Image 1 (cartoon, rainbow, N blue to C red):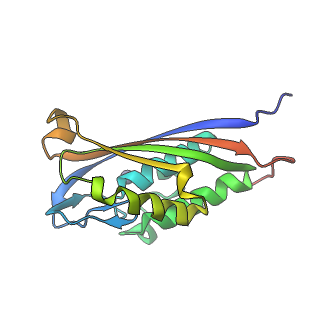
Image 2: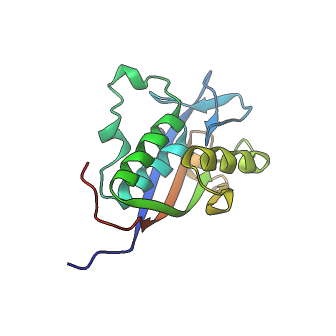
Length: 169
Ligand SMILES: [Zn+2]
């Protein structure tokens, strides 16, 4: 059977924005009066990247691996989840070529923090920062990402075969 040398993965995540929650994106704390509501730290960018990694390997989604009913993931640092997803992908025989992610939210302005987010994700994944793109967009006031109700993130990842036989998990 023909073995693909590369696979693509796509991830999406969204969380409600509420007062009294820290606003953490890509492991970076952004000062803002609201933050994403969730069981873990609700890091929407990191969650989208996790789902892209899992998706590329056809390993299901984040919720299947780290259920939000499990108390060990309450307020968890999502970078830990990302490291675990990356480990699953590596064990399947895949390495990350590049990641491209987009966060959609009206406020706060994320541009000043994008560099730190890229550094943070690169650090956890052991990649050069040039392989990781993070873009911040608004939806021009439209919908739940535009009226302050919520925040969304999308990510795509290209995975390359590490070479050799696919290892069993
Ligand atoms: Zn999430």
